[in-house]
Length: 162
Image 1 (cartoon, rainbow, N blue to C red):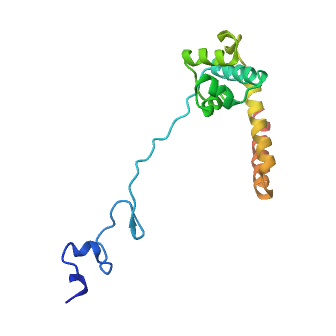
Image 2: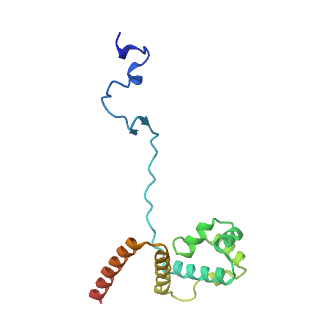
C-alpha cells in the first residue's frame, strides 16, 4: 500500500508528498488566501480656483468660530475627514452641504464663497509650510538628510528656471 492511496476520496488534495502541477491563483505558501479584488486607482481631480477659495474661507470661518473639524462635521452631518478634504480643496461641496455648513457656522451661505478671484499661492505656501514643520518635528537624522538633499535639488531647479 502506497502513501498516496491512504485516503480514498480525492487523495491528491490531501497529499503533502506530491508536488502540484501548477500553483492555484492566490496560493501563498502552504495555505490558500481569498483573492480580493483590487481597488481602482483614484485620480485626483483638479478643481477650479473657486474651490481653493472656498477651502480657505471654510477653514478661516471654522477657526474663527473656535470649532474643530470634528465639531463642524458633527453639526453639518458629515464625516470629519470630509471637512479636512474640503479645507484642503480636495473635494467640492454640493449646494445642500454648503447650506448645512453655513448653518453649522452660523453665517450666511455667501460668506463661504470667495468674493474675488483667488490666488492659490498663499494657500499652497501655507500647506507646504505646515507639512514641512510636521516632517521636521518627527523626522530622524537620516530622513532629514534625504529631505535636505531633495530640497537642495528643488532649489537648484528653481534657480535655473528663474
